[in-house]
Length: 470
Image (tube, rainbow, N blue to C red):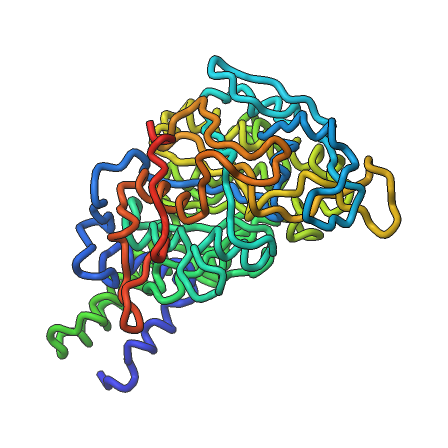
């Protein structure tokens, strides 16, 4: 045969009509073919630095930033200073604005939550609510990048990519890292980018606006061939590959491509099943709710159940890329948003617990920052009931569940008005260091040499918050 007719590029082009677009990078990683030699072990799983408490992560990201004083951090003192302007700040509104929502303790632990989370409150004893989060910037783009990659510029690998790089995948037929997002968020694909890490660690992004399996994932089926015919085509291509390889000893890239084709073919069948939420009983789908976020949470459970290491679920919609960014009508918006998030998040925790998965699955809930304890009004609007809340980065709340964290815990505190984190303060770098620790990774040792220096998710920062670890 003429080598010029059957180059490696030509062979890959011939096989590329199937699921290879999604599968090639993940398949190479799973086979340990592109992973750094010092990190890879058989089956695509890499050894952690020490025994992990969590094996996988589901990050529920509330795009825009939920209000801490309306959700998990009650501030009764706001009633006494309502309407007063914050000292040293020029607000765009009518001063401090109390939350209209009632707060109460829940569970045996007495974790305090607002009335906006009636379903989630049933899992109070599983939640670790961090009330003392803070970050470096109150602007969306740098705030999103910092929360995702530990850096305000779009030049660093994201958290999920670092986890994929450090631990690999438990399922050789599925990606290690999946981003579920109905459209593109602010900043866009950089939020799940692997940057300078090997490309196989970038997330497979899935547009969850339409959960029909043929629309959910491009090229899930061959456009012309049935599976049996595709199998015959692949067998022929593999014979040609082997003939090509027999003339070139020790051609590792070619061997990698040969094996990657087989793995990509296997992914067609497994991904068709894994990503199809319609296979769930109607009662389970109803538990999560019919919204895009609800069904995305259900899909996240299906994926981690099948060995996907890291799933990022974004709360956005077609009309609004930052739905939690409540500059106006904060109270109305939070009532609507929390109703959806409450139902689906509680369903996810219940489902994971019932299946025995929560203990080894780390669930994270939060946004890029919080919202101000004072009002933001448009123009000359004085009606507090229609007021919004501005961006707030010096004190906000997030919660963790499962994966080795202490449940039934309210950790840290903001001041009496919710302005600043003052007790057991947790920076984003500290959060990243702690989450990596729960996964069995030392954030100071999880490094990658690029452009002459060693990089890590936490850069030169980060401390492990040991008080929240069970």
